Image 1 (tube, rainbow over the protein chains, first blue to last red):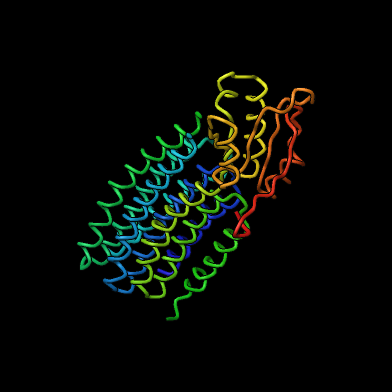
Image 2 (tube, rainbow over the protein chains, first blue to last red):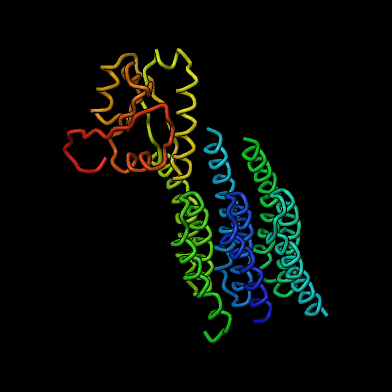
Length: 83
Length: 91
Length: 183
């Protein structure tokens, strides 16, 4: 199972690198969307591995809240770019 | 048998992750990246969670909730991001 | 706690923090702050602190980013006061000047806000009471430049002095009597 997690970490590094090197704010938002999903899935995998219910519940909440926050942020950035 | 299925599901999910994330690096348009990211990320994540569900069925409510959340929210998020980024790009 | 992946996950936190520190553009820094929040939630979750991870995701990623975005947006602004009659004439010079100002301010991640005032007394009053950062008025007719821009913020004046090459306006720095030092 350790190999699976290490592969997931490698997949997580790609959007982090992208967020660092790209200059457009929407590309950064995409990278953030990717990171938000990946981190919460990783927390979920770890919680299942350890058979820890609480971390699992938190992972699901983070999954939905992260997405909601992302939509809010996207709308705010759009509004602020317009004016 | 079920062990094998669950592992293969998880591995397929990780392959999907890489396949969807690798186009992020590069000079493609935001919409192209968003498409590959939303499709491959959501499918990959759902496949991983499904693999976990096969492996440890005792936590099924949690994992089912995760799958539903992924399916709904990530789709909506894809639309919202596409709408916002294309609207902002024209200005 | 001998899982080897912990040692790979934890360095992600200082990595994201360094990315945040070296980011220049405030809006990009906000997005990276959100990434830092996601990575921090991951680290806390891996280390077993479910409550801390939840707090980080809710407050650090959602609430703080939204509030900071509003704060950054409303503080990084230069308010320029002009007279209504000047605006009404719709002169090309003034429009060109405003376009120039916008361009320079955009390079410094600032916005330009135009505020109109009915007469020059009200304009002066607004500058003195710090409602606006700068005024743009018609200069004396004998000078070859038709506008005069007075700026009361030192740093803004320095930026404009070095970068504004518009032949339309003269620049000056005005000191406003104030109780506190910062604007």
